[in-house]
Image 1 (tube, helix red, strand yellow):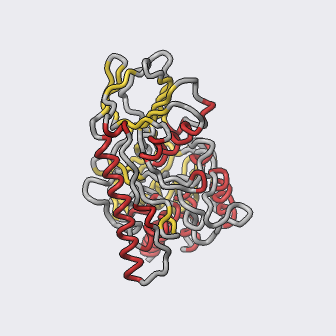
Image 2: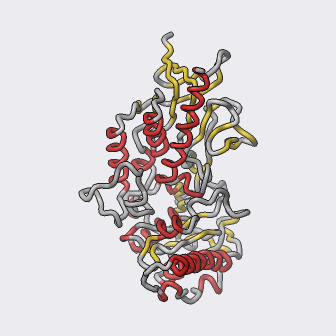
Image 3: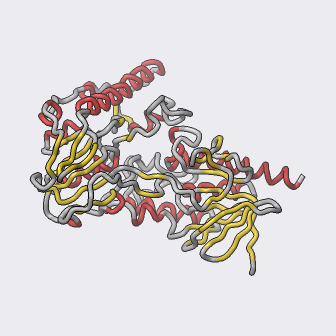
Length: 413
C-alpha cells in the first residue's frame, strides 16, 4: 500500500483551511488541504437562498484579497454566492494545494512519530495535523417535539426559502442571527410566524455613521480573550439582509411576528415556553445600549468628528406578546405546520483519535493542542472573540503557521 508523506495536513477547505494554507505557504511549510466536499461547502449547501454575510465586504474578508467592485462594494453585504466565489478566487490566488471530495475518516498517532490519516482516497502520513473544520459541524435539533403527522421539523441548515414550506404558520426556535433573519424573511413573505427568543446580544448595525464591525474593532471587543462569565454561548443577533439593519424584536412584533420565550418542553400537542421573554428582550436592549455608550465614550475620548445619532437610543414600546406572554401553545390549534430549529451546532472530532481533548472538548492554547503536532483553527474563542470570523481566522492561522514552522525547524535541529 502506497502511503503519501506530507509535513502538515490541513483538514477542511473552508475559510480556516484556506487561511492556514496561505500562512503555511508564507512560512515555507509543505502542506496539503483536504476537503470532503467543495471549497466553502457550508456556504453553498447549508444556508438559505437569500443569505448575505453579516459583515460588510471591507470587514468579512482576508487582508490580501478585497472583494472587487464588480462583486460588491465595500459597504455592501456579499451574497453567499459572492462569498463562495471569493474563497475560490483566493484558493487560486495562493495556489492552495487542496483536494476536494476527500473525506478524512480517522487520524491516529504513529508509533514512530507523527500521525496517520485514513481517508477516502488513501493513507497519508503527516508530522502535523490542523483541524480546520470550523464551528458549524453537526446541526443540533433538540428532542423536544416528537414526530407528528403534518408537522415538519428542520434545522436552519435545511431551510432555503418560504416557498419550500407547506402552508401554515411557522415556529422558529432561536433568535440568533439565523433565527431572526429567517423569521423576518417568512414574515415578509406573508407567513404567520412565531419566534422563540432566548438570551442574546443585539448590537447596532450602524451607529454614528460606522458599522458595528468597525465599532467592535476600535472598542477592543473583537479582541476580547475570554467571554464574559456565563456568556460564552450567547447568540448574537445581527443582520446584513436588506442592506443591513439592526435586529429589533419589538419592531418585528409590531409587524405581526409573535414572540415567545425559550422553548422548554412539549406534552400532548402543546409546546411550553419559559416566562423569560421580557427579560431576554430587555437584556438584549441593555447590550445594545451598552455598545452605544461605549461608542460615545470612545468618540469623545479620541476626539472623533462623528455625527450624533439620538434616534438610535429610542426603544419602542413593549408589544402585547411581551406584557402578556404566551406560555403554552397548542401547535395544531395555532396552525403550525413547520418548526425551524435555529439552535446552533455541536463539534464532532470523533475522527481525531489523539490526546488533544479534555471532557470531550479540544484542549489547546490559541489553537496549539495538548497533543504535540495537533492544532485547532476556526473555533469560537480560539484566541479571541473574533476567532470564528473570516478576518479572525486569518490572524489565528498566522500564529499557528509560525508555531508549526518553529516546530519543524526544531525537529531538523
